[in-house]
Image 1: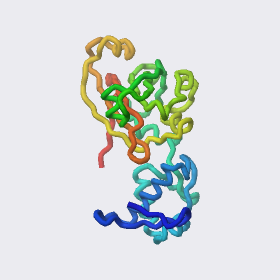
Image 2: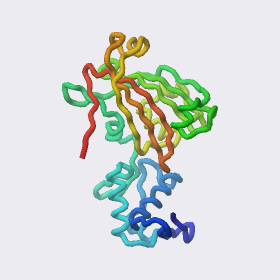
Image 3: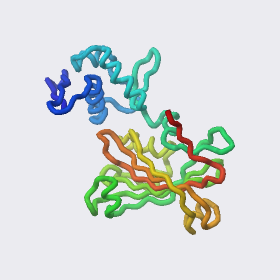
Image 4: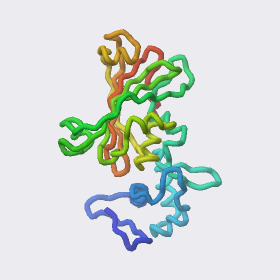
Length: 253
């Protein structure tokens, strides 16, 4: 729990029932400022000295909070320039959320081919995952990811309709950036973290045609829930991956 002494000077306080290290409280205040849009993706945040004065703590406490946020890819330190809000426009962010790499090695750029974009009402599962009320508006996107002009992933993406009300098939096709960069720049939504569940499935007729594999071929099913600031779920994605020439890479430790 936090209290605010004024609009310009914020003082962290400990909850009477739970203990949180002071730097974690400062991290929470910085996250709140990011969620409120005080500092935009790609932009610089105030210096450690300025933040220490704002929060009435030591510069070392601020530094520890920023170090943890940098380790979580929320902030980026640039030597001699300062600390900046992480952005999906940074090429490194692309490989953070797409863990598919060629079995032969190396890195391949992916091309997104939007197939459909339509509006619907949230059914029980979508409402539960996206924390919506049953029947609230959602937007569903289907797209194909290709590597070296070969289809590898077919995605079905569910989004809260209120947040992404202006999203259309045309805007998806016109975008020259990744879909997460589009969400960030056009709708102000940045994906902070994601949860994924993987399992093996057999290709049905529709997915087999899109991925150019035989019906019944083994595919990797990847279900992802992506969260923005405040741990708010803003994307539910169900993807089918052809792993004939690619594998899912996850680095541990």
